[in-house]
Length: 192
Image (tube, rainbow, N blue to C red; front, side):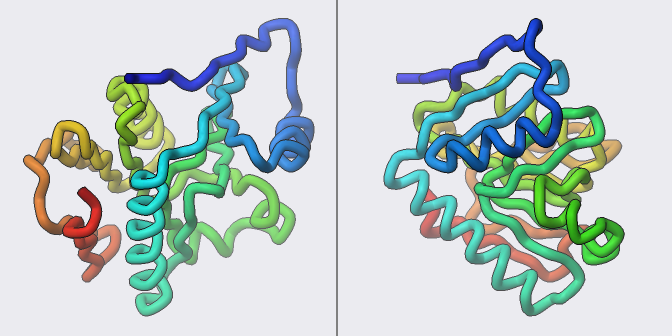
C-alpha cells in the first residue's frame, strides 16, 4: 500500500528558519521536510528492510568519503536548506570539502544552507514514485551534480546528472560515482 507523507499547508502561518529548526529539534522522533512554498511534510518512519538498506548505502558512502578526503558524507537525518527555500533530507548525501568549508560553524551546526553535490534517495515499498522523482529534479535545479533514485519496487535505478536527461538502469549490481565521486562504487548486492 502506497502511503503519502502528510503535507500541511501553512498558508497563514510562516515558520522562520529558526522556528522550523526548533520544531525539528523538539520532535526528534518525527522526520520533517519543507517545500519551497513553506508546506510542512511529515514523513513516517521507514520499515525494517528500508532502514537496513539505508544504513548499508550510507555506510558505503561514508567509508569512501573518509578514505577519499575530498568531501563530507551525510545520513538520512541531515536536513539541508536548499537555495529555493526548501528543507530536504536525502537518504544519503555528499558535499565537497570546498563547499562545506565555505559555511560558518553555525551554518554547519544547523541545517546547512547548501544543496549536496551528490544525493541518494531509496524508494521504500510504501513510497509513491512521482514525489521522489520530483524531489530529485528539485535537487538538480538547486545544484546537485549527481543523484541516484534507487527504486527497489521496480528494480531500477534512475540517475540524475546536471545538464543531461535522466538515465534509467535495470537494477545494476553496482553504481559508479563518475567524476563527482571518483572511484566510489556503490555495491547494490545487499540492497534488494
